[in-house]
Amino acid sequence: MKKIYILFITLISTFAVEAQVSFGNMQNQISRSKDGINVFDVQKDNREFKGLSIDLGGAFNMDFQATNSFNDQSANSTTVTTTPTGTTTRTITGYRLMNTENNFTLPAADMYIGAQLFDGVRVNLDVYLASRHHNDSYVKGGYLQIDKLDFIKKDFLADVMKYATIKIGQMENNFGDAHFRASDNGNTIRNAFVGNNIMNAFTTEMGMEVYYNRNGLVSMLGVTNGNLNQSNEEVFYTSGPNTNTTHSPSILAKLGYDKQLNKDLRVRLTGSLYHNANLGNANIYSANRSGFGYWGILNNNAYKNTITKTDANGNVISTTTTDVATTFSKTSTPEATFNPNFKNWATTYMINPFVKYKGLEFFGTIELASGGDKAGSDDKRTANQYASELIYRFGKTEQFYIGGKYNTVSGKLSNADAKEVTVDKFEASAGWFMTKNILAKLNYVNQNYKNYSQFTGDPATGNLNNFYGGKFNGLVFEATISF
Image (cartoon, rainbow, N blue to C red; front, side, top):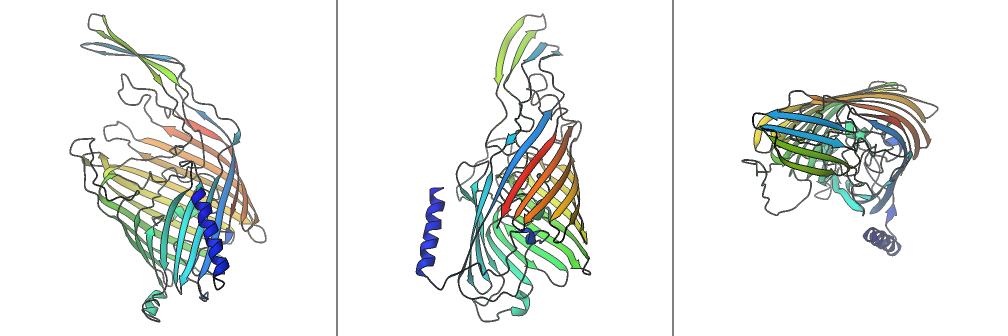
């Protein structure tokens, strides 16, 4: 945090010395206020370049959560597994899900630092000041956005750059449209609800994206180095037979149509691709380090798992008691989400229809994901997600809204599993934009887990699975500010 303060003080000192520097005169920037809702990808404007200009912004949210978790596990249970060589008896004692208080969760905060460096050239840095995953401030990403090539020569390729944009850096990669309506740490003003999609596509890999948007055409092609954490160190993968040690670039693509047909009706339809041919672990569904909308979901308190093994004659061979620790962590971020945990390779497609007629708004997600079943195997495993949002915005400036969202994900956690698991969620929300920069919302959630096995790991000796017959529901009140 000290480094952030030093940077801020340095910037202010620089402004005092360099009188020609202005504030907030940024070109082609999507608003961080209510005005940025339903603005996708990149945008062009006609703002005149007036020299070096600095942008400072922030986002903050505070949640009061009142939810309860349930599952079908018993507090005490005994199972017996018999084989020709003997029996294994598992005795569980003292199991229960962790209670959560109706209380505030950790607030999240972001800071945005940007500069208009040249006509059509802008740099942006996103900083997580407070997030669940890190105790200290850290950089989410940064990128250079180029909308003109006048730094090469005046009006160089002007007819092309009138519609084209280039982004270069380590940034939130543009896969699909859903992430433009999702919560991102302190920045939750774009999300009409509290939770994101259950299978949350989000990653910040180093790369470049090139956009060409013209007369309703939406297009983007991108490439990254496939890495979430950057390093040139040689990587050794030791787990699994013949584990894939090659790491390929990730390919991103988007193609669609977006048109305001008249003053009341706007339609948008896009299809997107993310593909990596060779990798160790897929980042696309595991890279969000800022936390999600619901905390303390389906975590167990500590309990005991006692395993007694006997031979074929009933003689006791061994008795072992394991103290199973709580699964709750103040810095973990997997709760209320589904990660298919693909290995070796990953390909996913997303289709997003969007229709807005006056104040009525529909947004959908069809997501078809596939990847390697496990380390050292290219065998294909799939997971499919479907989501639909219906929102009605009303008031003189559409400052009020009510909405509902249904989301379901199905897929096998391993090809060896007999059944696919399913997670489904319903959310209902009501919100009030007190100003363009301040939003208060009340959200109801009901999420269910189906076909999860009763035990994890070895069926005879494994611990209890918290998602067996799992569900959670309740209310969250969220206040968010973004500027």
